[in-house]
Length: 217
Ligand code: CA
Image (cartoon, rainbow, N blue to C red; front, side, top):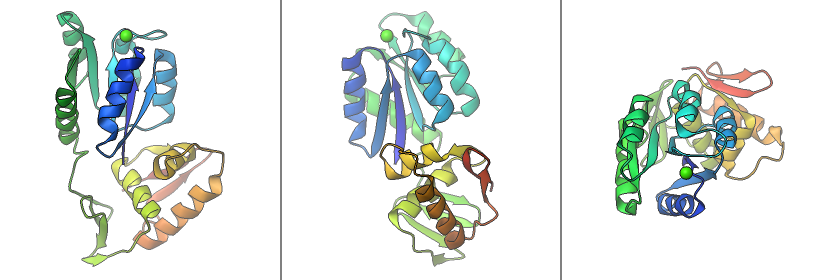
């Protein structure tokens, strides 16, 4: 499941975006303050960020400094008529922008285009000797299907989509189990161990001291 961050201080707009994107198999989290969003971006992984320009705490342009090294696609949300904001946003590394107010259908189309550009809507991921078919949710090695549980599959997908990135146990838990982390590191550790064995990634999913795990293809 893809995870989006919506950084927007106008709650009705944030809610509307979350509502219109959540249906399509994505999970949305919202932040209304720039500083809080920066903290979140440092700790969690996202597949896409929808970013308002004018925000309390830290504005959208400053937030781009946190986002750019992480290579997360960004769609800027700008006010009608502010051409300079749009240009500045694109120069700062945004992938696209939406002018408020926007139609839901336009939002969805732009999100889809940006995700496709980043291969987030891929049909197949080939990595670490595995072929992961995202449509049928099957995993193969040398032509043989490896049976995985739903959680193991989600866990594999998370690693496959974030190669080389140290993922916090907290992040892993929230992404795979889709609920709040209550400090239960055993669940994550056990599933990682099982996944490693099943797919033959014993040397590829590395433990990262005090953080969690990193997939090194
Ligand atoms: Ca705003």
